[in-house]
Image 1 (tube, rainbow, N blue to C red):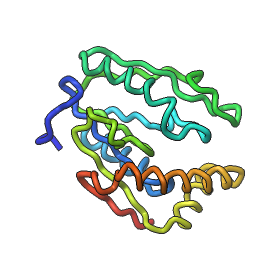
Image 2: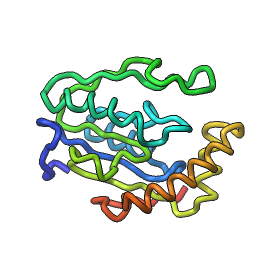
Image 3: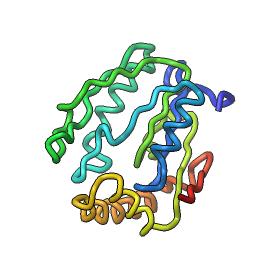
Image 4: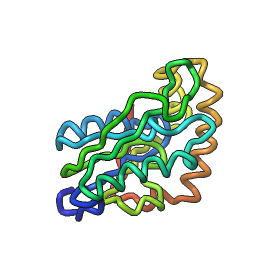
Length: 173
C-alpha cells in the first residue's frame, strides 16, 4: 500500500467498495486499525433515495481540504429518527495523515480520481448478503435493501468497479 503514491496531498486515499452485506465495513475497520488510518464511510452521506449522486460533492469538498493539508469537515446523515436527515448528524473532522480509508458503496467510483488504491470486497451470494444486511439493520429495512441491491447491480455494471479494483477480497461468512 505504501508503494502507491499519495493523490490527496500527502495522503493516500484507499477505497473499500463492494455490495451491501459483503463485509466491507468489517474489512475496512480491521485494515484501518492495522495501518492506523482514519476511516470514513459513504454511509455518512448516502440515503435510500440517494445512494450515489447528490451527496458526492460534500465528500469531495471535505477531501479537497485534506489535499491542501487542512482539516476537512462534514456532517453525517442523521438516521436517529428512522429516516435520513442529510447533513444534520455529528460533525466529522478528516485530518491529513498518511492514509485515509473511504469505505462503502461507490467509494471506488471512476470519478474518484484521488484514489491511491481500490479494494473491492465481494460475497457472491446476493441472497446471503441480503440476509446479513437485514440481520444487521432490521427486518423493517428489507424492502430498502432489495431496491438497493438492484441499484448496486446497475451501478457496478456501468462503473466497472470490480474490474478496476486493485484488489478483490472475497468474504465467505
